[in-house]
Every structure is written in structure tokens, then in C-alpha cells.
Length: 240
Image (cartoon, rainbow, N blue to C red; front, side, top):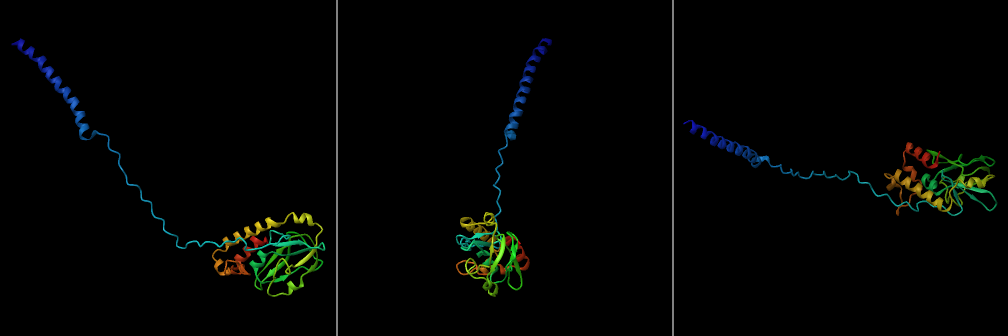
């Protein structure tokens, strides 16, 4: 009997060992089948990009400004939009350029007296329309020897700013040094084109009211500006 019991124990132990081993292998396999697999990558719908609403007030295209303002050969422009030109008699004629002429429009002109001293970059004359005025800088040093009485007496402004619209003449002792500070020829044209671009950007809301047919500014384009804007324009373009 004792022999039979002892012979049964090894067989049972082997049976129990196989059962336990089976369970140890089966449990991980079952977990794998039931969800132990690596989760599939979640596929997300691409984020929707919100549509950009059109601007409530579309920006109107600015007109081309090339050629708005002219300057003839032989004329030297000051950054404050006055000019100087050497005359055949050795004197230097002074006036306002086409930019100032069209920006200010018909205006009275206050000129220096004969014998007055003028200095480059300093106020020498004044343009006004009865309600507001703007001082203009001399492009050159010298002594005034003549003034254009016809321009001073006109009430409808200066016409032909580079010709009959000259304003005064000076005897200029420092002519060569003064001319080096001025624009001429292609540099003068680039200077006026740059001024045109800046003017168009500053006045874009008013441009439709101050352009003639064909997109050319009327005389007095700056009159569309309110008082404070006018003063700022004078400081910006005429340096006064």
C-alpha cells in the first residue's frame, strides 16, 4: 500500500506541473488576443483652417505716380522743394518746384526784399492760400538782387514754376558748395518720384477727389487735407 502511494505522487506532481506551465503560457496569450495588441494609431481629421473673411473695405489700387511731377534739365532741386538755376548773367534764379506748385496750388507768394540775405536751408519765402501758409526754404546762399514782381502780384498762383514763375534771383558767393547739396538730372527725377510715392501713400483716401482724368494731380492737391494734416505735410515735404 505504501508503495502504491509513493508511486502516485511523482505522477501527480508531473500532472500539476504541466497544468501550471500551461496556465502560465495561456494567460499572456489570452491577454494579447483580448487587447494586448499595440493600439492602432488614432487617425485624426485634419484641423479645419478658418476661412479668412474678405476685408470690409478693400484697399483701392493706388494710381501710378511716375511722371506726376516734372523737372527740366539744368535745374537743381533742394530737398525742401525749391530750386536753383544758374543764369547766363551769373545770377542764380530761385523758385518752387512742380511738386510744391501742384501740392499747394494757387497761392499768394511772399518774397524777400531786394538786398535781403538768404541762406541755404533757411526760410526765404512763403506760399499761402488765404487761410493757411507754408514757409519755403532757400536752396542757396546769397543776396537777393531781383524779385519777380509779376509772380508776387498774381492772386491765382505761380504758373510755369521753372520758367516765368521764377521768384527771385541772388548773387551766390558759395555756388559750387551749395550745388553739391542739391539734386539734378536723374537724381532730381528720382527725388520727385520718391516724393510722389510718399504723397500717394499719405493721401490715399483723398486721391480720388484730387486727381484729374488720367490720374494727374490737380493744382492744390494738398487742400484736401485738414489743418493738422496740412501742417504735418509741410513738415514732411517742405522741411519747415
